[in-house]
Image (cartoon, rainbow, N blue to C red; front, side):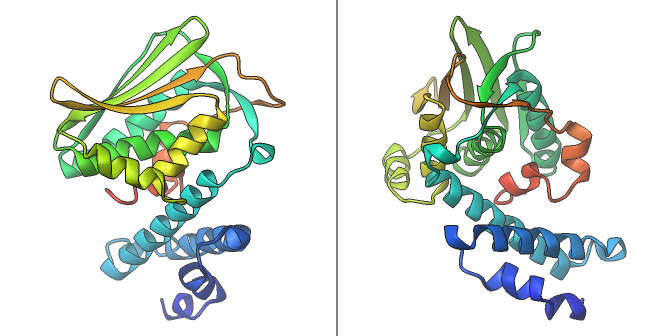
Length: 245
């Protein structure tokens, strides 16, 4: 552990400012430090090691939110995604991780594939942020994620029992780099709409996306499956849920 504490990766990862101009350097250092930490399976229950891992994930999450909140249209890379498969695996992974905290994530969708043009990393971050927000700000044991498909559009809803502070939510939307501003920017770049509302004593987030989004495509996206998401402790699901896991 002493070697890690004095490594360049440690100093860069945990002390560099979270800023766009440092994105590449900081992301590489954080991922390298996490891999260094995970090379000690015999110490996986060490509270110091776990605390450092969590700090890395929180900083990666903050960096991702900042980048997503300030992303320009020229940086927006679309791929053909099977949205149903992507969400199913993300929700299953989130359900398993949150089960230790007395929360669950359910997923409902049509049986057929639902292919849309989307930016996979940004869409993954958005969905995980919605789930994390539901865990943090509502009391419901179950977070229900639903995917619906209609002509020309798909809708993702995330709902749980409890009441959101909509004024506070609006305030966070105005803060560049916040999770809420990142979600709104990602929705806008997808030419979609993201809304929050109260319905039947439940807090609901609704994301509506068009299925005929124009733009240059970078091929098909092969999303990581459930095993990959859980086995890789640097995966998007650990980073996206870092606040609550």
